[in-house]
Amino acid sequence: MATKRVVIDPITRIEGHLRVEVVLDENNVVKDAYSSATLWRGIEVILKGRDPRDAGFMTQRICGVCTYSHYKAGISAVENALGIEPPLNAKLTRTLLDFALFFHDHIVHFYQLHALDWVDIISALSADPKKASEEAFQYVPTGYNPIATGEDELREVQRRVKKFAEKGDLGPFKNGYYGHPTMKFTPEQNLIALSHYLKTLEMQRIAAQMMAIFGGKNPHPQSLTVGGVTCVMDLQDPARLAEYLTKFKELADYTNRAYYADIVMAASAYKGEPSVTTKNNLGNYLTYKTMQTGPDSWLFDATGYIKNFDLGHYYPLDESKIEEDVTHSWYKDTGFLHPYNGKTIPNYTGYVDGTSINDKGEEVPAKVVNPQGKYSWIKSPRYNKEPMEVGPLACMVVNYAKGNKQVRQVVDSFLAQTGLPPEALFTVLGRTAGRMLQTKVIADYGIVAFNNLVENLKKDQTTVAPYKIDPNKEYKGRFIGDVPRGMLSHWCRIKNGKIENWQAVVPSTWNAGPADGKGKKGPYEANLIGMKIADPSKPLEVIRSIHSYDPCIACAVHVMDVKGKKLGEFRVDPLYGGI
Image 1 (cartoon, one colour):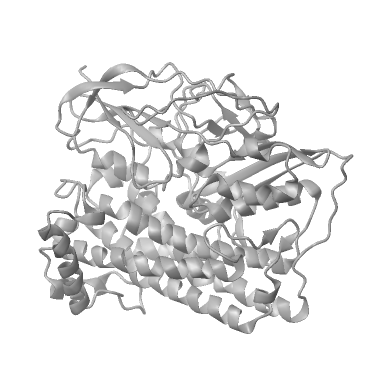
Image 2 (tube, one colour; image 1 turned 60 degrees about the vertical axis):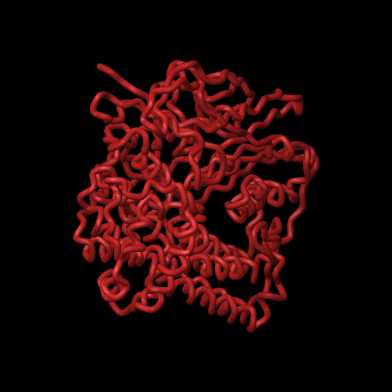
């Protein structure tokens, strides 16, 4: 059987450095796939020997997008190790910061990073603005009107983008696969989505300001500390509380009137496109409770998983079964290790000579993966030796299986409005919808956390718990929770009052990791297999699938040596975009 390879390097519109390689048969169906992270970072090296109270300020530098996620994880892991229970005000404030992060991350991801996989900008320029404005009313939830879709507004959007086109340069929209056969929006639908793309540039500013109210600044907020939060004066200021509430309501409104509506529109337009509606190959989904809304309540309260796409059975998590394997990762040793015992010793072996289809459809020489060797800086996390998908979709389907009322209401309403069956959640379209549905749960029900914080502040203004570190005692602790890209965990050991060891197992590690020592592939790789590619020189189907996970490869690749020795030197090869 004749085969050909397509190497996409780099995958753009993501955070970090990622290449994806697919092997196609004579009918352009993906027979095998390889996800390869091509750059590593060394945050854990910096943490070694540091005061644990500083950990959060350093871990948030793992990534420029997920700053609050790793900040909270670093702080919380130390709190867990030291046995600290932050006061309720601190817990609820951290949830409010989470809301700002999730609004920002999810809305920006769909429009600025993922939208051009669905939206044909050239087609939008030929749309009828009046017809598009009328159509927009079809997709919003009951009780809402669409936003940024008035006829005059849509005409202005066309005018602005046509100015780019007339100059022969589409600016931020250039290099799209416009006219691709798997793009299914009508010209009018493309214009609606294009208008929201531009409107989101305004909304992300509001989300950033929302984070800064109690975070001090954005990105890299500064108001968390081991034991609680430091934004005492802001929490005691009614004007600051009101400012947060106003921005929350603006973003919640935008979620319903634009984001939700556009995913409903996509579900309508793309329901017959196999590359986005074919069921995934990997049916295991893992999540951890997140967003505390009261003394004993969480917005997303599931800590567990489902297997084999089964929404009827929910299984609780046993964190002792979380392990990582490096058989096909550029590190020494093989076998499964729990993060507390993790080893990360680089062993770069590179790629081998081969061929790839280029953007002209020609087969040209290229560096390719050796399937029997190592090919990524990302490890392969497993739960009970099984690969798991994490992320907003996992959060939604596992909470649905557990019986979370808010999640069930939002998911069931979406399925009813679109006419999709529950099985449609387990697709590329479903994964993209899952991120929006998580945002809608926050928009519709997250205000409970704000109200409970205001009520609690009336009787208790404590924001930090006292503690001490015994230099003669050894500690170990972890943070586990869901962040915008899925389940994140940080694992630490403290000795002589200093950090002895630190490991981060992040969402994109779970999803983007290579095959493990048992040959089981992670979500990126597994879910590409069987996908038909219309044009190997324009592999939009592959890119759309990968973007649906919202990759953060900067988060996923780390390196450390608990002995503090030099780990190695690597040369960046600009010819292949790798190391």
